[in-house]
Image 1: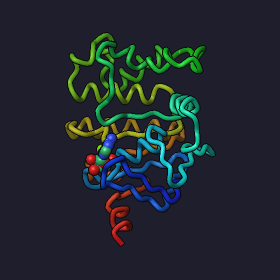
Image 2 (image 1 turned 180 degrees about the horizontal axis):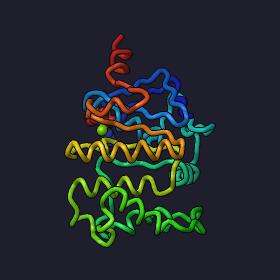
Image 3 (image 1 turned 135 degrees about the vertical axis):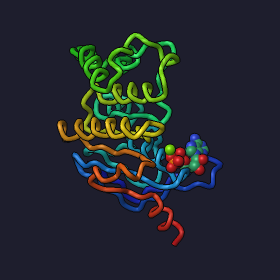
Image 4 (image 1 turned 180 degrees about the vertical axis):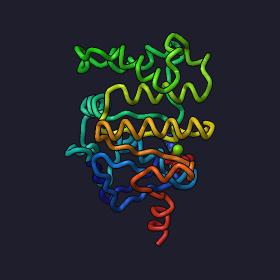
Length: 222
Ligand code: ADP
Ligand code: MG
């Protein structure tokens, strides 16, 4: 479960302020996050994953107060429990698709001994329609292909929390639906929580709940 209380966050030398008095997201919930560009959606995902550590307010995930954890604890939490599909994918150009997906296992000693990930990577890519791209490098992939590789990397560990930042952006309608169905299926199969930022309002029906950042902005203006 995610519980955010009295969260206030500002970037240094910036007038933007994210202000969330209360936000609760239950295990297995599929939540869409919508709201104007620049309203703080990506910032919230970064806070929930501990990439940004806030000083004001509480951010709790499955009993962990993530804003009080050490860097090492956060890294371990992220690699074991959080799959993040970044808006800009964050694929490493000098690694091929297969190595990009498995990189977290290679660099994190706490994951030593985890087996079967290679075949899982292949299976996920096949499922996402990029099974023939495993030996390709990111510069030879289209935008949509990179997006699907980023999703494979996020799901490889069956994480209890998946954060997806506009995972259907710039895809054609058919592929948008496909991607979303895969994320939903994964969430149903693992009872994992799915938080997806999206601008595709025609896709909102499949979610359990919608969080509209326009509401947070209103509450700060009052
Ligand atoms: P969204 O994802 O809803 O478009 P963001 O969370 O990316 O919004 O950004 C919220 C606000 O914070 C914007 O005004 C953006 O310019 C600003 N911002 C984002 N990242 C940084 C940063 N690293 N430093 C300073 N300001 C930032
Ligand atoms: Mg964003």
